[in-house]
Length: 307
Length: 228
Image (cartoon, rainbow over the protein chains, first blue to last red):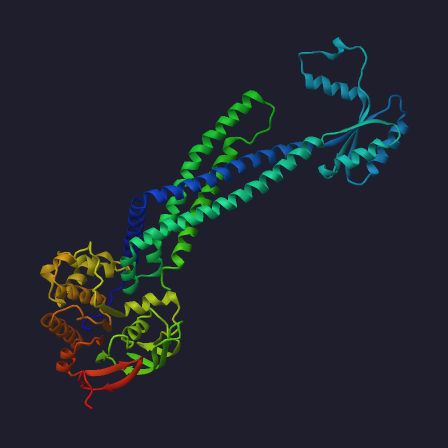
């Protein structure tokens, strides 16, 4: 050992060389295992499409539910000709029910004014009807929308209440649909992720086998664990990223198209606008795709490197 | 440099590859590890470069206990030694120079240092003028010299060689061994597993003989065959 072994290293230059090496190798692997890579990318893309589509739908359903949530109330229509003390008694009784957040008395005149406001300027109600057909009513705000049904039933039992409606039926269905979507989506996605992992493991394993000699020598001369791993990790990550791009190319125009259709056909439908949803969704999918890709690579590597 | 204490290696089948081997090699020594095929020579070397772990006993290399070395510390150990094999293990699609430079690249050597150091290593084994040849364009002896250059390019204090002359004719074998002797004279500790009788008998170095996984002889200035 004649001269000193190592000069201080410009670490940045070495790191740059390592990154260039990893990038070149992972791209070469992509070319070499074309078909398997395509299969891996496709399956990740399908997974992401499913997860992304379910997420977009679920976000919209939740959005609708939250809007309906605020609107859910039990409305009690009162018998005609009640005296003010009787009204106060009924209001107090309703207020006393468990799960009731608040009660507001809406006189029939006020109800008519509201209806007029809702109809707008085009029709003047007073021109159409002479007498006010609307009853007095109590608007009952509930703490938990899912209890609306029970509270409505209790309110209906109070003397002086003629009829009760509650807006929770729609909400019930929405919440059930959201839960089903989430459960089914999660189960399917888990299955697809498992398949994706297996396929990525196979492609990366092919690359490893193809470069076994090279890897053996790298390990023999003391290449760092991550230096040996990085091209394979990058290969998996690239597969995930490419799948995300492809999935986004379907999801983004698809969502925009649906929004446009909804605006035309169901203008009153409360939808989540594209800028509020898509950037975050695509970002999360990209992270998920890359994560799945790298996990698959790591699993494949575990058996091969530095045992 | 190398210290084995009561080292045994038993495979899952129950077969002993090494049995209670103790061996001490000071820095700068040249040792021949001899014995018939299956005596445990390669297993011993594999334990030293931590491709395998001992079932029993302690191994230290360069003062470091490597018996239970965690995987992430293996690269550091390997950088402190060079390993040479009978089959050279050259990458067929890289030139002699690239094969040597590869060993520097993968241990994150700054790019501007790679070329001068790789060329110096090729010069040491006398192959600078063949730097751009691919392995298939080189003779067996030249290939082995490239693999020695690769093992030495990081200037490790220890060189392990597993049958480095196994595939070579006597004359070329002799050249390789002379090269290894020169490397030993520069201060590199050398452990050479071989069953090349001629070479062992001419060089008269320390000889450690394995048989059935046990050390049956350890003598300085030894011959291939025991005296008695």
